[in-house]
Length: 58
Image (cartoon, rainbow, N blue to C red; front, side):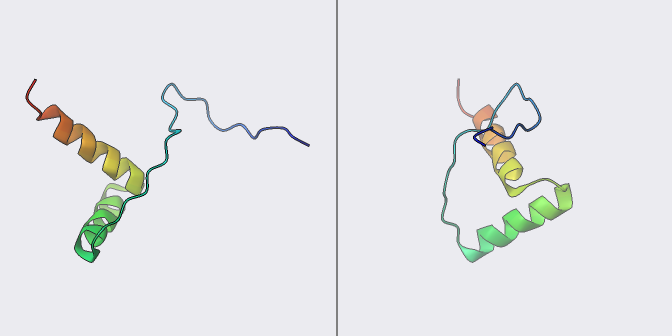
């Protein structure tokens, strides 16, 4: 009975959970991005962090 359900194997597991508070405007923008790009809100957030990180001074 204690068998763990297996999902698709991945080289990059997403095992960290993050809770954020958003204002209404930001939430609507996130929802729109998610719908237009046809990806999850979490994926939109990951892409945003990666874009900002690319622009950081090295």
